[in-house]
Image 1: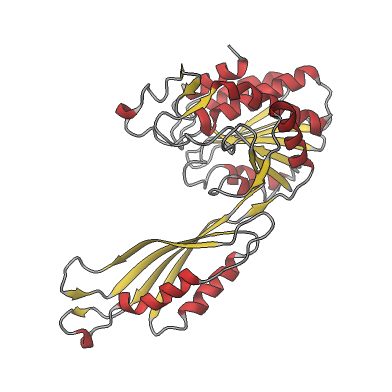
Image 2: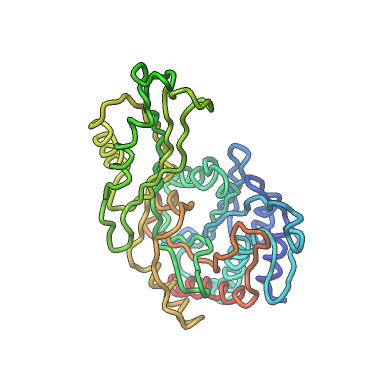
Length: 375
Protein backbone atom coordinates (compact mmCIF):
# COMPACT_ATOMS: atom_id res chain seq x y z
CA UNK A 1 0.00 0.00 0.00
CA UNK A 2 1.27 3.48 -0.82
CA UNK A 3 2.25 5.74 2.06
CA UNK A 4 -0.22 8.43 0.91
CA UNK A 5 -3.13 5.99 0.70
CA UNK A 6 -2.39 4.66 4.17
CA UNK A 7 -2.34 8.14 5.70
CA UNK A 8 -5.49 9.18 3.84
CA UNK A 9 -7.32 6.14 5.23
CA UNK A 10 -6.02 6.90 8.71
CA UNK A 11 -7.38 10.46 8.55
CA UNK A 12 -10.74 9.44 7.05
CA UNK A 13 -11.23 7.00 9.94
CA UNK A 14 -11.08 9.93 12.37
CA UNK A 15 -14.65 11.26 12.35
CA UNK A 16 -14.08 15.01 12.25
CA UNK A 17 -17.41 16.61 11.43
CA UNK A 18 -17.02 20.39 11.51
CA UNK A 19 -15.80 21.96 13.78
CA UNK A 20 -14.33 18.79 15.30
CA UNK A 21 -10.78 17.73 14.44
CA UNK A 22 -10.81 14.46 16.43
CA UNK A 23 -7.05 14.06 16.50
CA UNK A 24 -6.29 14.62 12.80
CA UNK A 25 -4.03 17.59 13.42
CA UNK A 26 -2.27 15.85 16.28
CA UNK A 27 -1.43 12.99 13.90
CA UNK A 28 -0.19 15.43 11.26
CA UNK A 29 2.01 17.19 13.85
CA UNK A 30 3.42 13.81 14.94
CA UNK A 31 4.58 13.24 11.37
CA UNK A 32 5.91 16.76 10.79
CA UNK A 33 7.84 17.25 14.04
CA UNK A 34 10.55 14.63 13.25
CA UNK A 35 11.13 16.43 9.94
CA UNK A 36 12.15 19.60 11.76
CA UNK A 37 8.81 21.40 11.84
CA UNK A 38 7.93 23.58 14.80
CA UNK A 39 4.26 22.73 15.39
CA UNK A 40 1.91 25.12 17.13
CA UNK A 41 -1.72 24.50 18.01
CA UNK A 42 -3.94 27.60 17.84
CA UNK A 43 -7.36 26.88 19.37
CA UNK A 44 -10.19 29.40 19.07
CA UNK A 45 -13.91 29.09 19.82
CA UNK A 46 -13.88 25.29 19.92
CA UNK A 47 -11.93 25.11 16.67
CA UNK A 48 -8.53 23.44 16.35
CA UNK A 49 -5.88 25.00 14.12
CA UNK A 50 -2.34 23.85 13.36
CA UNK A 51 0.52 26.07 12.24
CA UNK A 52 3.76 24.23 11.46
CA UNK A 53 6.94 25.65 9.96
CA UNK A 54 10.31 24.24 8.96
CA UNK A 55 13.05 26.81 8.35
CA UNK A 56 13.46 30.52 8.94
CA UNK A 57 14.40 31.77 5.47
CA UNK A 58 12.34 33.03 2.57
CA UNK A 59 10.64 32.05 0.40
CA UNK A 60 8.04 30.35 2.57
CA UNK A 61 5.80 27.86 0.77
CA UNK A 62 2.72 26.89 2.78
CA UNK A 63 0.38 23.95 2.30
CA UNK A 64 -3.09 24.79 3.59
CA UNK A 65 -6.21 22.73 4.18
CA UNK A 66 -8.90 21.58 6.55
CA UNK A 67 -9.44 18.45 8.59
CA UNK A 68 -13.15 19.06 9.21
CA UNK A 69 -15.73 17.47 6.94
CA UNK A 70 -19.42 18.00 6.32
CA UNK A 71 -21.94 15.70 8.06
CA UNK A 72 -22.37 12.29 6.47
CA UNK A 73 -26.10 12.60 5.93
CA UNK A 74 -28.40 9.54 6.08
CA UNK A 75 -26.12 6.66 7.06
CA UNK A 76 -28.42 4.08 5.49
CA UNK A 77 -27.78 5.62 2.08
CA UNK A 78 -24.04 4.99 2.25
CA UNK A 79 -22.82 1.79 0.61
CA UNK A 80 -20.22 1.50 3.39
CA UNK A 81 -19.90 3.47 6.66
CA UNK A 82 -18.70 7.04 5.93
CA UNK A 83 -15.88 6.97 8.49
CA UNK A 84 -14.70 3.49 7.62
CA UNK A 85 -12.40 3.93 4.61
CA UNK A 86 -13.11 1.27 2.02
CA UNK A 87 -11.35 0.50 -1.27
CA UNK A 88 -13.86 -0.69 -3.84
CA UNK A 89 -13.91 -0.76 -7.63
CA UNK A 90 -10.71 1.27 -7.94
CA UNK A 91 -11.83 4.00 -5.57
CA UNK A 92 -11.32 4.99 -1.94
CA UNK A 93 -14.65 5.70 -0.23
CA UNK A 94 -15.25 7.73 2.91
CA UNK A 95 -16.27 11.18 4.09
CA UNK A 96 -13.34 13.48 3.37
CA UNK A 97 -11.79 11.24 0.70
CA UNK A 98 -12.03 14.04 -1.88
CA UNK A 99 -12.62 17.05 0.38
CA UNK A 100 -9.91 17.03 1.57
CA UNK A 101 -8.10 14.45 3.68
CA UNK A 102 -6.41 12.81 0.70
CA UNK A 103 -4.95 16.19 -0.25
CA UNK A 104 -3.60 16.65 3.26
CA UNK A 105 -2.09 13.15 3.23
CA UNK A 106 -0.53 13.85 -0.17
CA UNK A 107 0.94 17.13 1.09
CA UNK A 108 2.49 15.51 4.16
CA UNK A 109 4.01 12.62 2.22
CA UNK A 110 5.23 14.95 -0.53
CA UNK A 111 7.07 16.98 2.11
CA UNK A 112 8.49 13.82 3.69
CA UNK A 113 9.90 12.70 0.35
CA UNK A 114 11.18 16.16 -0.56
CA UNK A 115 13.04 16.64 2.73
CA UNK A 116 14.49 13.11 2.61
CA UNK A 117 16.00 13.88 -0.78
CA UNK A 118 16.78 17.58 -0.24
CA UNK A 119 17.37 18.19 3.49
CA UNK A 120 19.26 21.41 2.76
CA UNK A 121 16.62 22.94 0.50
CA UNK A 122 16.25 26.70 0.14
CA UNK A 123 13.55 28.68 1.93
CA UNK A 124 10.97 27.28 4.33
CA UNK A 125 7.91 25.02 4.30
CA UNK A 126 4.74 25.57 6.31
CA UNK A 127 1.40 23.89 7.02
CA UNK A 128 -1.76 25.81 7.90
CA UNK A 129 -4.53 23.38 8.85
CA UNK A 130 -7.94 24.20 10.34
CA UNK A 131 -11.08 22.39 11.48
CA UNK A 132 -13.41 25.31 10.64
CA UNK A 133 -13.49 25.48 6.83
CA UNK A 134 -16.80 23.67 6.38
CA UNK A 135 -18.43 25.71 9.17
CA UNK A 136 -18.77 29.46 9.72
CA UNK A 137 -15.02 29.96 9.17
CA UNK A 138 -14.76 32.50 11.98
CA UNK A 139 -12.30 30.68 14.26
CA UNK A 140 -10.15 28.86 11.74
CA UNK A 141 -7.78 30.03 9.03
CA UNK A 142 -8.69 33.67 9.56
CA UNK A 143 -7.47 33.47 13.19
CA UNK A 144 -4.16 31.87 12.18
CA UNK A 145 -3.63 34.48 9.47
CA UNK A 146 -4.26 37.29 11.95
CA UNK A 147 -1.67 35.86 14.36
CA UNK A 148 0.90 35.34 11.62
CA UNK A 149 0.40 38.92 10.46
CA UNK A 150 0.84 40.21 14.01
CA UNK A 151 4.11 38.27 14.28
CA UNK A 152 5.35 39.53 10.95
CA UNK A 153 5.61 36.09 9.34
CA UNK A 154 5.70 36.57 5.59
CA UNK A 155 4.10 33.91 3.39
CA UNK A 156 5.33 33.92 -0.20
CA UNK A 157 3.41 31.00 -1.74
CA UNK A 158 0.41 28.99 -0.59
CA UNK A 159 -1.20 25.89 -2.09
CA UNK A 160 -4.68 25.11 -0.73
CA UNK A 161 -5.61 21.46 -1.24
CA UNK A 162 -9.23 22.02 -2.27
CA UNK A 163 -10.61 19.54 -4.84
CA UNK A 164 -10.30 21.66 -7.99
CA UNK A 165 -9.89 19.12 -10.77
CA UNK A 166 -12.86 18.51 -13.03
CA UNK A 167 -12.66 15.65 -15.49
CA UNK A 168 -9.08 14.52 -14.81
CA UNK A 169 -6.54 15.10 -12.07
CA UNK A 170 -4.66 18.26 -13.00
CA UNK A 171 -7.03 19.74 -15.57
CA UNK A 172 -8.08 22.73 -13.41
CA UNK A 173 -6.39 24.82 -10.75
CA UNK A 174 -7.96 27.80 -9.02
CA UNK A 175 -6.03 31.05 -9.01
CA UNK A 176 -8.79 33.02 -7.32
CA UNK A 177 -12.33 32.92 -6.03
CA UNK A 178 -15.28 35.24 -6.31
CA UNK A 179 -16.40 37.26 -3.33
CA UNK A 180 -19.75 36.71 -1.64
CA UNK A 181 -21.96 39.61 -0.52
CA UNK A 182 -25.44 38.90 0.85
CA UNK A 183 -28.27 41.25 1.68
CA UNK A 184 -31.56 40.93 3.50
CA UNK A 185 -33.91 43.54 2.04
CA UNK A 186 -37.08 44.47 3.95
CA UNK A 187 -39.61 46.48 1.94
CA UNK A 188 -42.23 48.15 4.05
CA UNK A 189 -45.91 48.45 3.21
CA UNK A 190 -49.16 48.78 5.14
CA UNK A 191 -51.03 45.66 6.22
CA UNK A 192 -54.74 45.55 5.55
CA UNK A 193 -57.79 43.56 4.47
CA UNK A 194 -57.41 42.24 0.97
CA UNK A 195 -60.93 43.44 0.08
CA UNK A 196 -59.93 47.05 0.88
CA UNK A 197 -56.62 47.55 -0.97
CA UNK A 198 -57.12 51.33 -0.95
CA UNK A 199 -56.56 51.22 2.81
CA UNK A 200 -53.29 49.27 2.56
CA UNK A 201 -50.01 49.28 0.63
CA UNK A 202 -48.95 45.91 -0.69
CA UNK A 203 -45.13 45.68 -0.40
CA UNK A 204 -44.98 42.76 -2.83
CA UNK A 205 -46.56 44.91 -5.53
CA UNK A 206 -44.27 47.80 -4.59
CA UNK A 207 -41.10 45.76 -4.84
CA UNK A 208 -41.85 44.03 -8.15
CA UNK A 209 -40.48 46.75 -10.50
CA UNK A 210 -37.40 47.27 -8.32
CA UNK A 211 -36.76 43.52 -8.22
CA UNK A 212 -37.00 43.34 -12.00
CA UNK A 213 -34.48 46.17 -12.37
CA UNK A 214 -32.04 44.57 -9.93
CA UNK A 215 -32.30 41.24 -11.74
CA UNK A 216 -31.64 42.90 -15.11
CA UNK A 217 -28.73 45.07 -13.96
CA UNK A 218 -25.29 44.40 -15.47
CA UNK A 219 -22.98 44.91 -12.52
CA UNK A 220 -19.65 44.60 -14.35
CA UNK A 221 -18.00 42.97 -17.35
CA UNK A 222 -15.74 40.66 -15.37
CA UNK A 223 -12.11 40.55 -16.43
CA UNK A 224 -9.44 38.24 -17.83
CA UNK A 225 -9.92 35.75 -15.01
CA UNK A 226 -13.54 36.27 -13.92
CA UNK A 227 -17.01 36.05 -15.39
CA UNK A 228 -19.30 39.06 -14.81
CA UNK A 229 -20.72 39.52 -11.33
CA UNK A 230 -23.89 37.56 -10.57
CA UNK A 231 -26.85 38.82 -8.48
CA UNK A 232 -29.43 36.23 -7.41
CA UNK A 233 -32.46 36.13 -5.12
CA UNK A 234 -32.43 33.14 -2.76
CA UNK A 235 -35.58 33.66 -0.67
CA UNK A 236 -38.74 35.80 -0.58
CA UNK A 237 -40.90 35.90 2.55
CA UNK A 238 -44.18 37.80 2.75
CA UNK A 239 -47.66 37.46 4.14
CA UNK A 240 -49.26 36.02 7.26
CA UNK A 241 -50.36 32.75 5.71
CA UNK A 242 -53.94 33.98 5.45
CA UNK A 243 -55.45 34.51 2.01
CA UNK A 244 -57.34 37.66 2.93
CA UNK A 245 -54.54 39.79 4.42
CA UNK A 246 -52.27 42.17 2.54
CA UNK A 247 -48.83 41.83 4.15
CA UNK A 248 -47.17 44.72 5.93
CA UNK A 249 -43.68 43.87 4.70
CA UNK A 250 -41.80 41.55 2.39
CA UNK A 251 -38.31 40.18 3.03
CA UNK A 252 -35.98 39.37 0.14
CA UNK A 253 -32.66 37.55 0.59
CA UNK A 254 -30.16 38.04 -2.21
CA UNK A 255 -26.51 37.36 -2.93
CA UNK A 256 -23.74 38.75 -5.12
CA UNK A 257 -20.95 36.51 -6.36
CA UNK A 258 -18.53 39.15 -7.54
CA UNK A 259 -15.10 39.47 -9.05
CA UNK A 260 -12.19 41.82 -8.56
CA UNK A 261 -13.87 44.00 -11.19
CA UNK A 262 -16.26 45.21 -8.46
CA UNK A 263 -16.00 46.20 -4.81
CA UNK A 264 -18.31 45.59 -1.85
CA UNK A 265 -18.83 49.32 -1.41
CA UNK A 266 -19.56 49.89 -5.09
CA UNK A 267 -22.15 47.10 -5.27
CA UNK A 268 -23.88 48.29 -2.11
CA UNK A 269 -24.06 51.84 -3.45
CA UNK A 270 -25.60 50.75 -6.73
CA UNK A 271 -28.26 48.65 -4.99
CA UNK A 272 -29.28 51.67 -2.92
CA UNK A 273 -29.34 53.89 -6.02
CA UNK A 274 -31.79 51.52 -7.71
CA UNK A 275 -34.03 51.13 -4.67
CA UNK A 276 -34.12 54.85 -4.01
CA UNK A 277 -35.87 55.37 -7.35
CA UNK A 278 -39.02 53.75 -5.98
CA UNK A 279 -41.71 54.97 -3.61
CA UNK A 280 -41.32 52.69 -0.63
CA UNK A 281 -39.41 52.50 2.60
CA UNK A 282 -36.83 49.79 3.06
CA UNK A 283 -33.98 48.47 5.19
CA UNK A 284 -31.02 46.32 4.16
CA UNK A 285 -28.77 44.22 6.37
CA UNK A 286 -25.53 43.40 4.57
CA UNK A 287 -23.28 40.40 5.22
CA UNK A 288 -19.85 40.04 3.62
CA UNK A 289 -19.18 36.32 3.19
CA UNK A 290 -15.78 36.96 1.65
CA UNK A 291 -13.95 39.34 -0.62
CA UNK A 292 -12.60 38.07 -3.94
CA UNK A 293 -8.96 37.22 -4.39
CA UNK A 294 -6.86 36.72 -7.48
CA UNK A 295 -3.35 35.40 -8.08
CA UNK A 296 -2.28 36.40 -11.60
CA UNK A 297 -0.01 34.06 -13.52
CA UNK A 298 3.35 33.97 -11.71
CA UNK A 299 5.99 31.83 -10.01
CA UNK A 300 3.55 29.65 -8.05
CA UNK A 301 1.11 28.94 -10.85
CA UNK A 302 3.98 28.28 -13.27
CA UNK A 303 5.66 25.87 -10.83
CA UNK A 304 2.41 24.00 -10.21
CA UNK A 305 1.46 23.85 -13.88
CA UNK A 306 4.91 22.51 -14.77
CA UNK A 307 4.56 19.85 -12.06
CA UNK A 308 1.13 18.85 -13.38
CA UNK A 309 2.44 18.67 -16.95
CA UNK A 310 5.36 16.43 -15.97
CA UNK A 311 3.18 14.12 -13.88
CA UNK A 312 0.02 13.90 -16.01
CA UNK A 313 0.86 15.39 -19.40
CA UNK A 314 -2.01 17.88 -19.01
CA UNK A 315 -1.96 21.62 -19.52
CA UNK A 316 -3.95 22.87 -16.54
CA UNK A 317 -6.51 25.63 -16.94
CA UNK A 318 -6.63 28.54 -14.51
CA UNK A 319 -10.13 29.07 -13.10
CA UNK A 320 -11.91 31.28 -10.57
CA UNK A 321 -15.26 29.49 -10.57
CA UNK A 322 -16.97 27.92 -7.57
CA UNK A 323 -17.78 29.11 -4.07
CA UNK A 324 -15.64 30.78 -1.46
CA UNK A 325 -12.70 29.11 0.24
CA UNK A 326 -10.17 29.81 2.97
CA UNK A 327 -7.90 31.13 0.25
CA UNK A 328 -9.64 34.47 0.74
CA UNK A 329 -8.13 34.79 4.22
CA UNK A 330 -4.67 33.60 3.23
CA UNK A 331 -4.59 36.04 0.31
CA UNK A 332 -4.61 38.87 2.87
CA UNK A 333 -1.09 37.89 4.00
CA UNK A 334 0.24 35.95 0.99
CA UNK A 335 0.72 37.42 -2.51
CA UNK A 336 0.38 34.11 -4.37
CA UNK A 337 -2.39 31.69 -3.39
CA UNK A 338 -3.39 28.75 -5.59
CA UNK A 339 -5.88 25.95 -4.95
CA UNK A 340 -5.24 22.50 -6.34
CA UNK A 341 -6.52 19.05 -5.51
CA UNK A 342 -8.33 15.96 -6.82
CA UNK A 343 -11.54 15.80 -8.90
CA UNK A 344 -14.53 17.30 -7.11
CA UNK A 345 -17.49 15.36 -8.54
CA UNK A 346 -18.25 13.48 -5.30
CA UNK A 347 -17.58 16.16 -2.67
CA UNK A 348 -20.26 16.54 0.03
CA UNK A 349 -22.19 13.64 -1.54
CA UNK A 350 -23.24 10.25 -0.23
CA UNK A 351 -20.44 7.75 -0.99
CA UNK A 352 -17.79 10.47 -1.37
CA UNK A 353 -14.72 8.97 -3.04
CA UNK A 354 -11.47 9.46 -4.91
CA UNK A 355 -10.01 7.24 -7.60
CA UNK A 356 -7.04 5.28 -6.27
CA UNK A 357 -5.05 6.03 -9.41
CA UNK A 358 -5.07 9.74 -8.56
CA UNK A 359 -3.65 9.51 -5.05
CA UNK A 360 0.08 9.06 -5.68
CA UNK A 361 0.14 11.39 -8.72
CA UNK A 362 -1.43 14.08 -6.51
CA UNK A 363 1.40 13.59 -4.00
CA UNK A 364 3.97 13.70 -6.80
CA UNK A 365 2.57 16.97 -8.13
CA UNK A 366 2.91 18.59 -4.70
CA UNK A 367 6.48 17.25 -4.40
CA UNK A 368 7.44 18.45 -7.88
CA UNK A 369 6.08 21.91 -7.03
CA UNK A 370 8.31 21.99 -3.96
CA UNK A 371 11.27 21.08 -6.17
CA UNK A 372 10.40 23.80 -8.68
CA UNK A 373 10.22 26.52 -6.01
CA UNK A 374 12.73 25.54 -3.29
CA UNK A 375 15.68 24.10 -5.20
